Image (tube, rainbow, N blue to C red; front, side, top):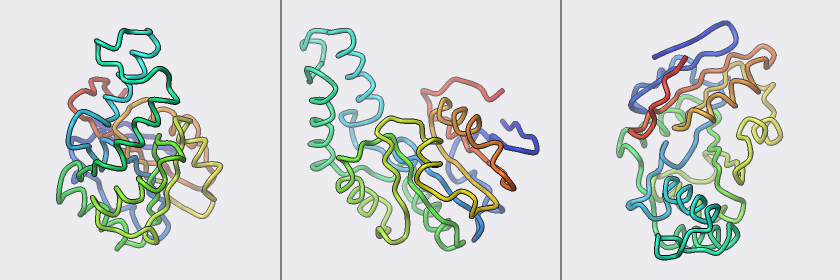
Length: 206
């Protein structure tokens, strides 16, 4: 599915290999989510879905017998960091994911991974990227949003005026909508958002 106008384009894709590289070149900023977009934990523990489930258990003050592992969000983040230091994620789509990352770099685009992960995970996240995707830290930039708006963090962290094209890839539709809302009026730029529709995503693109 696809929707577009003169300011932005939203494209629903089933695989990262469906991305069109026509706009991905030396005048392009590629903003790419990490978890469940290019990285996937080998099990449920430590995944985005697991983290949201744990937050809900804390919010509901559920019993620990229901799977809750932390007394509050601060302790949950510490538990997540412990998981990150001992469990290495895999590229979500195997070689197709690695090929996407490599193609962006070879095409001369500025590749920035923008993630909801917190700043306390910086070292573990860099290790995950290098181990799973096979690139070094001088080949990409990393923006750790700590759960804040990715669009706002992109504005604060990156000189967006340098680029003619901005390409954003994410598996959560609320992040796509937020990016469009905040960046669609960027001067002399076109925003293209790729909504990677994982099985649990059911929202259709308007």
